[in-house]
Image (cartoon, rainbow, N blue to C red; front, side, top):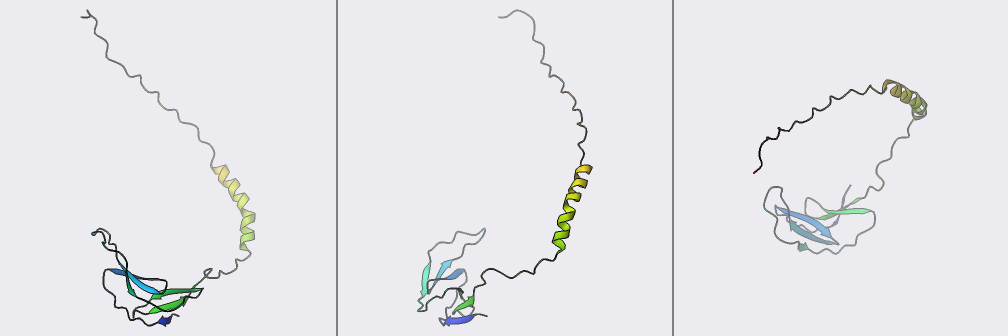
Amino acid sequence: MAEVVEKMGVKRESGYLYFLRGSDVWKTPMKRAGGPSAAGKAAKVAGGGFKREEGYLYFLDGAGNVARAKRAVGGQKRKAKKRVAAKTAAKKPAAKAKAKAKAKPKAAAKKPAKAAAKKPAAKKGKKK
């Protein structure tokens, strides 16, 4: 499926993410969940001398070489749907009518009236 475009033989170090920028191979420290933040910037590992073509996905393979695979544009083809769709479309209005008949509005339950909050009676007497 994949074909090697250029043999580079890049040796990978653990904790780094390797990627292609143009035809060059770069590495950057990986960010780990729950761990310390990855300090450092991307660094160029190797320079490449190939030209990219439209319709291919370029990547670094397991041996450290630049490889490419045909890009799957548009995804997979789907099987044509059978005429069952036309039959189910005719049944839908009847199903909706049954659902409406079942969902009759329920009588609104009366909510008990809240008891008026009583304030303690003010003390009668002389004001100072």
